[in-house]
Amino acid sequence: MTDRTPFPATGRSWDDLQAEIRSRSAGDLAWKDGRSPVFVFRNDEETYNVGRDAFFECFSENALGRTRAFFGIASMEKDVLDFGLGLFSAPDGAAGAFTSGGSESIFIAMKAARDAFRARTGKGREAALNMVVPITVHPAFDKAANAMDIEMRRAPLREDKRVDVAAMADLIDENTMTLVGSAPCFPHGVIDPIDELSALALKAGTWLHVDACVGGWIAPFFTRNGRPTPDFDFRFEGVRSLSADLHKFGFCPKPASTVFYRRAEDLDRATFRADAWPSGAFATQTLAGTRPGGAVAGAWAVLNFLGEDGYRDAARRLAEMVDGYVAGITAIEGLEMWAKPDVSIINYGSTGLNILAVAERMYDMGWLPGLTKAPRGMHAMLSMIHGGQAQQDYLRDLRVCVEEVRKDPMQASKLEAVY
Image 1 (tube, rainbow, N blue to C red):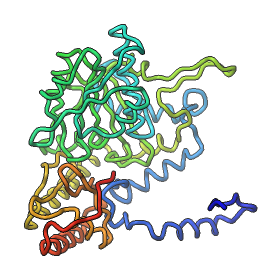
Image 2 (cartoon, rainbow, N blue to C red; image 1 turned 90 degrees about the vertical axis):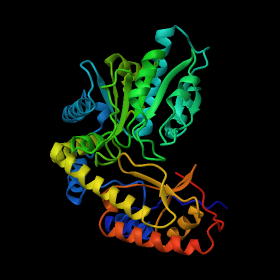
Image 3 (cartoon, rainbow, N blue to C red; image 1 turned 90 degrees about the horizontal axis):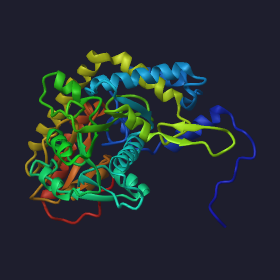
């Protein structure tokens, strides 16, 4: 017999269902207490409530029908994309799309890059294309490469954990359809030298995509607050496309991301079209057809609720919190940062003890440890749920775990880095 849940024979009341949902979730990680290093991103309770309430205002609307039926969704989506085009220094003639997340934003940007390469070179499917990327690039690029049969060529990093641009240059050939840089990269939290990559892309006549899914909607406000943060956007002429998630540090409800193109014709290249079936022409600028109108409304509401002042305040508080984590971690004997964080991702480890053994003990104390495998380290993408008491508890428990491991510094651990 299979262990398969049977289809319910009768309906159940909402009170009963709600009770079971809460019961099933009772054993979840205490993420509201800052115990998870990823997955959830919060500014404050008020921002969360605005996004949630706006989402449910448009709970039933389908963004696929925004130009034919749901005109309010269309107008809000345009506003969100206009906000992003301005934030990312996009030139006149630039365009964007609202997507479900970074993986979708990256996928359709890579489709546009592929089709632009074919249009420019006249090469077709017979050409074995490649993309040149840092070893720290997000696996979403591997998804796109796998789906479109594109070779991934990975360049090593400099000492500061940013990509080695000279090494990327050595990997480019006549079939390189795109270069990629991250703002910041997920493993180490640093922004690749986009100015140098832009110059390389222009010299090679190659598309450059900036993956700003993590930092895109918050890093510019670090800069506006006077905190030195590397630039990464369309101000660099070689940047042809850029992805940025609203549901990370835009603090908007999931699922919400954006992708932008220097030229409107590239948005057209990213568009999927079909007209072979009896129902007539079908076209989407995204992989998804049906999209939740609530995600658009939620993003629009949060962006308008916070405004520049709100995002600058969030960036200030986030930067102060990150600095506090860095200071607290490096004050623990034996720990060091593997990179100086540009935004809110921290990555640290040790040359004198097995950091995975430390992580294992943190797990036993109720923390979900983020990990990196090269170099071995602990990792977290900090948002405001990690501040206050959560920060104090984390640093206290980390110190305790390090002291325990110090008794047998290179003891084994069964943990492995998993995203």
